[in-house]
Length: 376
Ligand SMILES: [Zn+2]
Image (cartoon, rainbow, N blue to C red; front, top):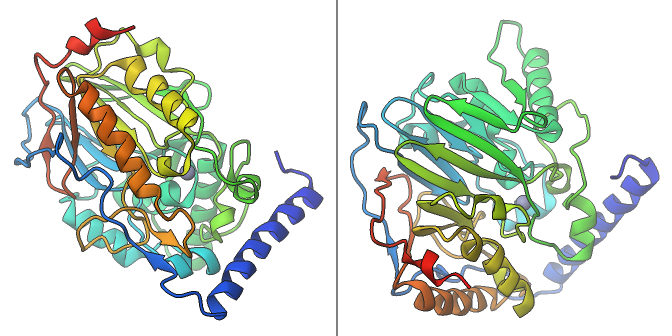
């Protein structure tokens, strides 16, 4: 916790120092300071799931993927969304400017998702970092969906609502926030959504001090902020129980200590965030895989949060940006690790990723659950 103002000042100094160092390196002429490697999951054995029409009254679960871990789920009657993050900033903007939700980008994204106001019941940011939660209060206010989360998400909603009321002479749309810290279960029609408190993937020390685990968004009077103002709060993994499909959604490639409780649930799909795994050492990767895939043994793994969050959403997906050489080679390390794992388990488990925005029906991969028999 960083409630002590001196400590908060220290960590901000750290962040400013990091930003200044980066700026200096830029000014002294570091060439090609940002590059976008190809997708780390574009190889044989990982299929892009096929698109199909979204049908009302179908009683099948379908999903739309916008990028990172923004997913929209629909069962023919009810619709809800993780994250609801549609902004994209360049690496320079992300590091050095105040990050502000862009109403135009949000509106455009909602139209591309064919999502009318009142068409969606819940927005669930998986934690409060900017690439998950920054747009969520705006999306909730625009659509009338309830916004669910912990105190950090609540403070972002408060800030947005205060700025809306302050800047408008007429009644204006605000976000309705529900704190799930105690109950940790909500129902959206037939979707029963359980919240499991899980670890975030570790960051290098100065970044961890600024926005890592145990840090909570401070009260403020506007939603916009610097990247380190979107402190993590609680990181949630969702277990979703629905009559047509049982699935788990992770928002970060952390080591999952609590998925053992779901090892006997016959999970159809595990939506697995893998962003930045290529920066971790071999022991971490081994434990990451064991604590996720080899704990719940799903019938299908769908990789998410592997794509760049600084590229355009109008262009094809690419891998995560490599800035000033930092994390250079991480995508190839991630890819090599995943290739090996996919090759070892593809006889009994399906591996996939999703197209951008198109609707995908989550069929049950029958006959692909024999991995359970292979448990050690
Ligand atoms: Zn995060």
